[in-house]
Structures are given as C-alpha cells and as structure tokens.
Image (cartoon, rainbow, N blue to C red):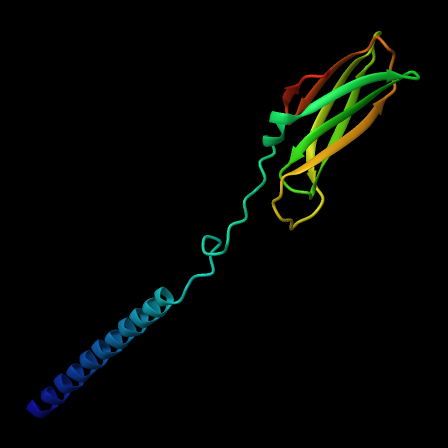
Length: 149
C-alpha cells in the first residue's frame, strides 16, 4: 500500500512539474512575442512623412473682390494667393426674393487633386450675378466677411 501511495505522489509531482513547465513555456512565448513586436517599427501615421494641410483661412489676408455693373449684370472678379495650385475658388450665390435683391456670396476653396506640391499660387476668379443694379451684396470666404470694392 505504501508503494501505491508513493506512485500516486510521484504522479502528482510529475503532473505539477508538467503544468509548471507548460506555464513557464507559455510565459516565455508571450515575452518573445512582446519583444518582437516592440523591436519592429510600427506602421503608424506618426512615422510616415506628414504632409502639411493647406490653411484654408490664409488666403484671406490678400483676398480682393471687385464688382462692376455692366449690361445689366454684376461682374465680380477676385485675386487671391492659394496655398497650392491644386485649389480653386468656388462661389455659391444666394439671392433673396426682395426688391432690391439681397445677394449673399459664399466663397470657399475646393481641392482639385489629392496630391499636390505646396507652392503659393496667385489665382484670379470671376463670376456674374444677374440682379438689379440696386441689389445689396454680402460676401464671405469660409464664413468670414470679405469687403467688396
């Protein structure tokens, strides 16, 4: 009977040692994976070259908007320096139904390309609004008031 008790305790010891070694091997595997992950450079946007976003407010400092009334139309022209040649000025004209008309002109930048070199670019734009000669106008560029000359 004593031999049977020794055999059970040897089995228990082998089982405990086997579980301990298995646990130790698992911990070593996780430590190795952690080390490998830390040693390799991560594919994160912080490590890629960061392209500067053009500042859409910057053109305001030199924006010029002029108006002329010719042949029953108001002709607007403007000159602005854009952050890249891959932008255009877009205008949205809203005419309120009143007399004289109240015209709201919203100007914004629109990108024409996904990739572009950053080079300050002078840009002229024109558009026509067909309203009465006495109409009143309000112009905004990115929600900031722009004077009309």
